[in-house]
Length: 250
Image (tube, rainbow, N blue to C red; front, top):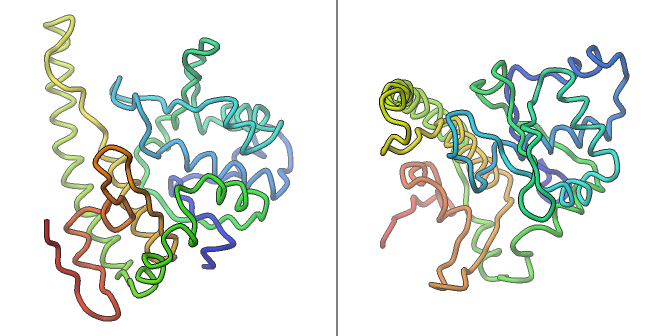
């Protein structure tokens, strides 16, 4: 995959956009399908307020959706809702908070699969929203070229870890629900579905595999944040630099 001319997206493996065409009795243009794939990928990205319920909605600003997808963003979302792929909480207050979206139960816990979107307009728009460019940190960009990840091994590790986390999550949800029955405001954290962890780590794995590196220095502690620093330490065992294994030092 060409990192400069594509967007790597992760969507539920049992999702097929033909369901949209069948439900709405339409034939989708390729550009609309591309927009849908990128939009669906955004639902599983880590965003604020994702732990306010067992099956949370991801809050997405209408102004940002219009900026990225154009005036057709409302039609796109309505079609996905009609096809039973996503749900909307329909809760918003102008200037305060925006609507939230989530996958329906059919797709919510489906293991993700990777897809490639090469629509040039979308690629350019998302390139402008990246935290850095190749010119911002040229020495780091040069270093990243030597990084190689065993994508098959890393992916297998992610799936195995997810299965383990999911078993614990089921127990945690049962415990939370039981406690919630007894207390109006249970003093225990709401369990976070590990499917978000899986999407997050696979997203980093594929970004490294496809040489789509990001660099950002925060304004408080001036720490450098990259795909490499954000990936789970166990997954760094699958990464090499010009054939040499990495060593982590804090």
